[in-house]
Amino acid sequence: MKSVLIEGPNSFRLAEIELEAVPPGYLLLAPLLVGICGTDLELIDGSMVYLRNGVASYPLFPGHEWVARVLELGSGVIGFSVGDTVVGEVSVGCDYCSLCSTGDYHRCSNRSETGFMGISGALREQMLFPARSAHRVPAGVSLEDAALTEPLAIAYRAVERAEISHSEKILVVGMGTIGMLAALVLRATGDAHVSFLSDNAYRSKQAVDRGFSAHVPGARYPRVIEAAGSAGAVLEAISALAPGGRLVLAGLTGQPEIRLPVDNIVIGDLELVGTLGSPGVWPAVLALLDSQKVHPAELVTHTFQLSEFPEAIELARDKQSGTGKVLIQVNKGNTDG
Image 1 (cartoon, one colour):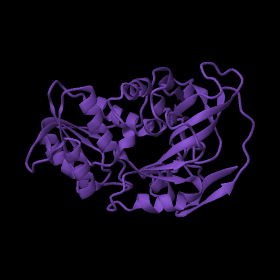
Image 2 (cartoon, one colour; image 1 turned 180 degrees about the horizontal axis):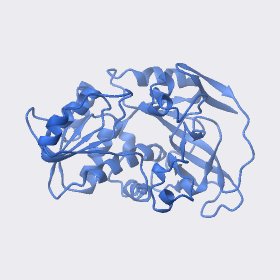
Image 3 (cartoon, rainbow, N blue to C red; image 1 turned 135 degrees about the horizontal axis):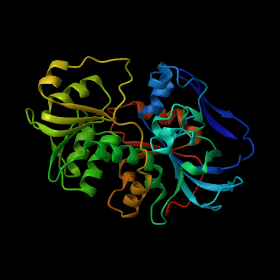
Image 4 (cartoon, one colour; image 1 turned 120 degrees about the vertical axis):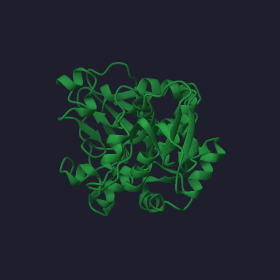
């Protein structure tokens, strides 16, 4: 079968591989749609933090934003049937350590990460995935929306980590996929007053068209979510915090380190909080999709076939092109969900 294979920095191809038998506790899946995100671009160029710190290594089989159809159940699997439409988490803990037992499986030192650490991703014609980390998609959710469950879950948890009070002002820095989804989650789940900051004209227009307010220079906010993933964005986010404010860092910069204004952080009594993955939020995120209050597929501008992966990557790399979310269709499925 065909699978995208990343062999090293800027070296990737469509390879022919063999799939082993379905292990106990696993699902055999036919991926339908797979999203391309900034992490995939960092895996290709070699800047992704897990490659830099040695946690992950080449070769890699990417694809961590996906929706798939169940083809076969491994022994011991319950709660799924052949033909089910499913999505799956990125962080998959060992399931026996103290962190996993308390729901912090995203911090497990023995965890796998779909698409780049221990579990092959969905940019392949068939994939194996642990059933305990899969979730059935509600019948009314489209495949396009379901394919973006993972980035929606990342955004949802970032909003949770912000701990927003009633009618609070919040700034979202960066209007890429995670930033826009965070703004949409904020609107769908509460009454926060959402502003945005972006240096991308296309994405800024998209935010305005969706009713979000552009940041006014000098304005300060008790809560800020940084989703741009750049050193400059982090500094702008810190400067926009009101005294006692909380900054949630959701973006990866792709850099070993950045300089921070530590004195300003101290005298401002500020909180800087990281948010890793999406532990424990998937049922709530799928319920949000089922409510039809958020449609991540609105961000999709291009869909490619698996054979067109190089062209998809080329387009996704062009940040100023007016390109939104890029999807890869791996296998055909019913787009009505």
